[in-house]
Image (tube, rainbow, N blue to C red; front, side, top):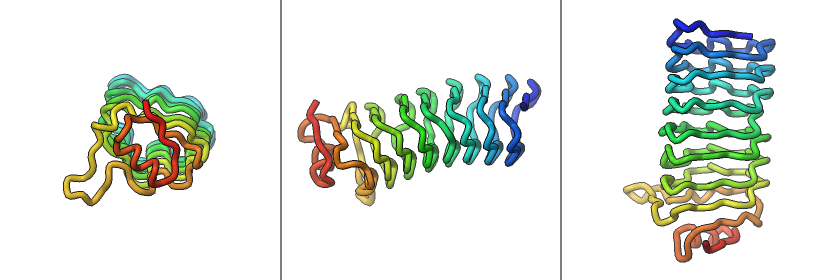
Length: 217
């Protein structure tokens, strides 16, 4: 096990990378951010207790931590950087409202991820956010979210229900180069996927174009 001392404010890059025998980690009360790859490839890591006061979780922090099935993200966190949980064993995750920035591929290849409580902090789903999350069944696109970018749900074969709280709030890029929902955002998903939104919305047009089922709410 690893216990971070209470005087430690920053966990440096690759600090514990590849320590395959580590099963638990407890952050000290003063840690405010981590570098990149801090627990990269810690394949037996199953229990992580992060502190309130942590604001940033660095890129690739828990990459391929396959025994990590659950983790509580503190309400102080505002930034989850690229690939923070990519390839981990997460089965569920709650993203607090305080999280304003999510990098690319944050939950990519989390094949056991079944439920996501994605609250109203960040405004868009970045590229490959949930790519190959093959156990994910439902997703609620909150009213604060405005765009779904490239391959965000690529290969999510179990995805059956996708609810848009406010499709009228969605926007594309200012120069028209990127759509509100990327053309390949749901590529590889089952054709039985139901998209729930208002009638005559952008979502209805998208569902018809890509042969998904549109359900008016």
